[in-house]
Length: 80
Image 1 (spheres, helix red, strand yellow):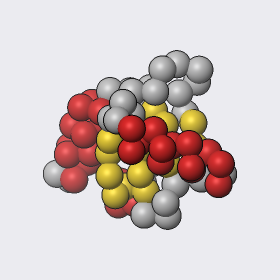
Image 2 (spheres, helix red, strand yellow; image 1 turned 120 degrees about the horizontal axis):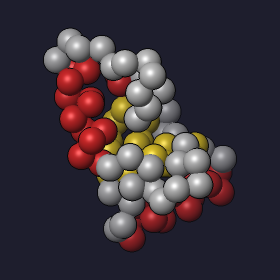
Image 3 (cartoon, one colour; image 1 turned 30 degrees about the vertical axis):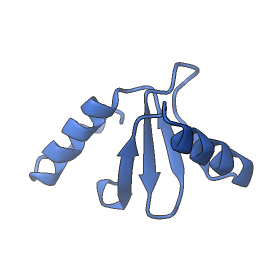
């Protein structure tokens, strides 16, 4: 689970700058890989400069964040 109010950015992992960001965060120990061995489909950047790698599509996470911002709470069983 990710605290919605800590999310700064949501990005697609395919661009060169994001790939560099991922590599730098892995080198610094700030990367959190929650893909469970699957392909990385979204990158979540937090205000603490942690980089979270997710196997869920960027659009899906954005929709969940929008729903959460509208006052709906995320189901604790769902993962970002």
